[in-house]
Length: 400
Ligand SMILES: [Zn+2]
Image 1: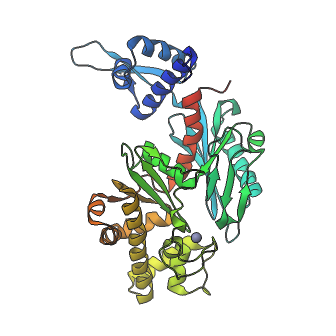
Image 2 (image 1 turned 90 degrees about the horizontal axis):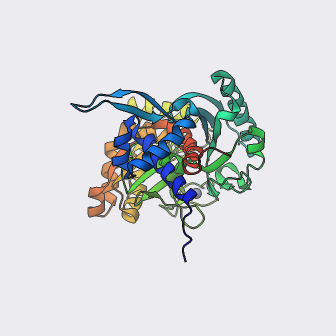
């Protein structure tokens, strides 16, 4: 038998509904909040009083309404809290500070050229970033709701309340079942982990190209490749949260060896290093200088270098093929391309990639799927990571 919801549960649910609505709606009025959320006027009044008292919500100015009385503008108070989002990439760690409405306040980034980062090192770097951001913004730790960490690979028990519970398997970084245990104590506030492609997908669903889309896929292409899948408006995770490891689905029996140890993986055809290797060969390695390499590749192609053009044509074909598998499997309304390398290639070749995708897809789902470049760009991973502590705040309120 289902347990009867307590008065406190109902109150918490109503509060969460209201805060989530205010986050998405921006500035609005009490009466509009009631209409949009379906909560009764009495409930809106009572929950709003609580939110105003804790300064989560502020009233500011008036909305002019035609003929009627003026309505007070209500909205989330951006200054009420700070959230951090960190993007742990293959060669770079970026930590950004956000206000309560996820407005970006400032960020810090550290690059690691040509070497692998280990979790200890990530913790040291992020801690340094956080200290420096807190000092710059003159924020007190008590205002921090938490830090979200978007990492490569599979995260078991994502967004756990205890940092030791989230287990990360990132073969590309040599991380085998690592945890970030003790990190929350070092920071002095909670830490929540998830896969970077999934946090990016969350950001795209809240603010970006996947907003209000029930069936969308966000593919993130850098040196590696991953995907976040939204079905029926929710992020699809699978049984142990590894769903979306699209970069290691196979599109060939041949090809160069993947960092996961296998052959024929999508990322060995569409990842930045793989494409650079197809252009200049392995000996002229761009390891640790991939962005520089990609700039050189695009410049060479613009000058008509046949091998550069070949490498790019191969990329477009293989990416179209790999995307068509997503189309046939998931029947998405939209596929959004992001990630630093994905963004560069989508900017230039979106149309070609789209026609390759449709050519390899079944006709009906292929004709439905719209391919887009991410509107959030490279900022999406850190922003998405910051939605983890924000989501916790919305559901649970201020830490007791
Ligand atoms: Zn692989």
